[in-house]
Length: 165
Image 1: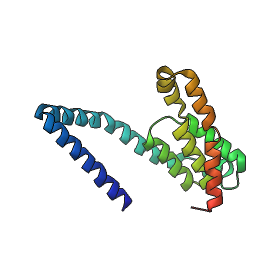
Image 2: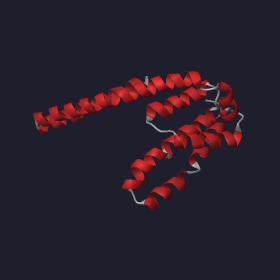
Image 3: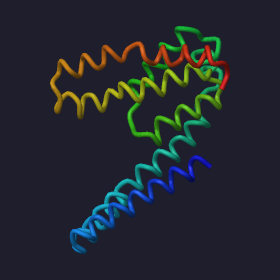
């Protein structure tokens, strides 16, 4: 139900943007539509790769390794491993969330997966190297990274206190 509400909100936003573009000029509206469709077509292969790759990952991920390294009883070591894996996992949401969901299905603990997803969201080393460092001041990037270090562990601790999801 929430997904439907978000979808409707997003489509309403797109319609409002299209109307605003049309008010400025029909040409602007059609150019915006063309650009959006072309971006969508360029994105499709990545989405397909991510979804199908996640399906294969679910089948080849060794469950015993997942349980022993990232299982509910893996403790601080499991959280640390999940955080490191999250930081070095490339790709967008289709990849990151699919890996998290697959790890849960394979026996990883919820706090460990929460640490993984939090680290993936915050650190994404490929994003830091390709986008942040070239664009932002280096000191600001390193300060952000350092300030974010405890957050995957904090998110996992809150999940543990809240109980099993």
